[in-house]
Amino acid sequence: MQSQRTNLTRTLALLIASSCALVACGTDTDPGAAESAAGSSSSASPVEQQSATPRLALSYDGGILVLDADDLSQVADIPTEGFIRLNDADNGRNVFVSQTGGFGVLDMGTWTRQHGDHGHYYTQRPEMTDMRFGGEEPGHVVPHDSRITLFSDGTGEVDIVEPAELLQGNAKSTAYTVPEPHHGVAVSRGDGTLVVTSGNEEQRSGIVILDKARKEIARNDQCPEVHGEAAAADGALTFGCQDGILIVRGNQIQKVQSPDGYGRIGNQAGSEASPIVLGDYKTDADAELERPNRFTFTDTRTGELRVVPFPASYSFRSLERGPNGSAVILGTDGALYVYDPATAQQIRKIPAIGAWTEPDEWQSAMPNLYVRDEIAYISDPTAKSVTAIDLDTGEKTAQADLPHETIELTGVSG
Image (cartoon, rainbow, N blue to C red; front, side, top):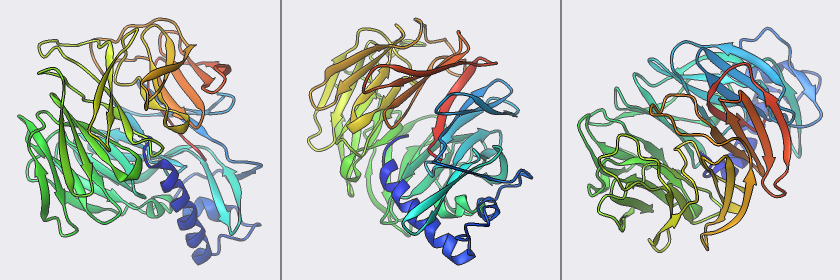
């Protein structure tokens, strides 16, 4: 999730600088201190680089590929067991790996050490750390307000992780458990409050805002089958419903109704650069798999929900935010579409990969879109490739063949 990343990155820079001062890792001749501070167990010594080294992580059946985000060369192939999911921890270095029994943490082996007004950049071999969080059926990972919130569907456990602790290799978290386990999501906010879904294994009804002591402040139960979240400008949050969307501003919750009786918004993408949230839109309640040809823009200031026609279809892995809060969608025709959320007008259409069809099973390999700054990365499992495209110019900046059909894609800034 891309929301609130800029603020989190700035906060992390200060946190890392403070941590370095405490452990004397500011010594230029001691790059190994950075490895120790990050809790890595790698025997390889860190290598200092001229600039930050962004990297990508792509999952496949049996492992995780790590690539250099600039030239798409392969850095590592890390074996894993079972079906896994990948989520950027949004701290520049780590990726959460959803595994059987909880969240693992992948060290992508790229980081920056702050030295007052400048930084030093390092890389080493990526590897899984020994840090673990959560419990059975690990689900959503939400970076927001300089903290990371994890939700475990099987246990209802909510883990709030401090980025500074994660970067130092400390598996510390503040835990809260919802009354009944369900497929949910939670967002911890900077004031200590927690916004969390309510429901059980049979149904989900809405969200609850809890104070620091985890006592209820506000509730809305008018959001059947609540799913997904996004953060927009000025700290606004949204949560999707099968008949609309919930908007959270402070401790106020607003329900926005879909124009259709069944108008499901289950997946959203937000940006701190925009008050408008991008969402999917499905209208067939009886479909085993609906392949939508419309999407939504929801203005978190006014509650206006706009349904926008789309010239192709897309999947839940197709929605992202781009430069200046632009909305980016990967269509099943293989093109990237860039929209202005304020006007809902298409800015650009960029040919990216071959045409594709969303598979019947959501766990199956399918094209995936990830955006970092102005670069969009598109994985194509059919072609076993990954492509990098500059969203400002529309030009392909890199392309690489992959040894596997990949499933999920994310990255870190380094």
